[in-house]
Image 1 (cartoon, rainbow, N blue to C red):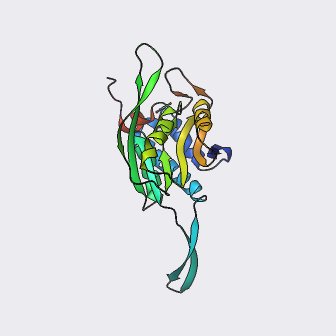
Image 2 (spheres, rainbow, N blue to C red; image 1 turned 60 degrees about the horizontal axis):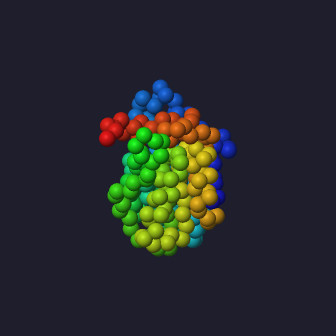
Length: 219
Ligand code: URA
């Protein structure tokens, strides 16, 4: 897997990252969602440099400009529910993307820290020959995003796959790296060192789904 960790070069992205991690600023859930969306826009812009382009003559009021347009057919897939603000950010830039949604959650095995990944809902267009962007804001163990890649296989073989994430735990990034080939790219805003035994990234930011959409009852 080719890992593009955008934290390696300081940029405006650090401002948004600092705000989503800040326990006081996080209380403003609209700002949290909008910052995740802005991070999605930046990650989308960065990965766009790896797309295929063709030239096009565009008529301006004063002449003809030789412009470039990407030619990839993009399918944007997000893991519900935390992926939605990241999805919106990517969709802000990839205007004509087709969309796929998947629900993947951890079902804990009684009295242990072990869990299974349960996929209950999946809607996806044909992926054959297309460019798949798979958005998951928090890569903790890496099992959800990998289970999603497996679940998407019956929908066709994409020409390219880009994984997009905000924060990953090193252990989760390593897990995916071992499972997938070199042709897959990961675009990520930062990678943290630790994962605690509840599956939270440390220092991370907490529960991205709860911060964006409110807390839920555990059943
Ligand atoms: N999902 C989250 O929302 N936060 C984490 O730290 C890990 C997974």
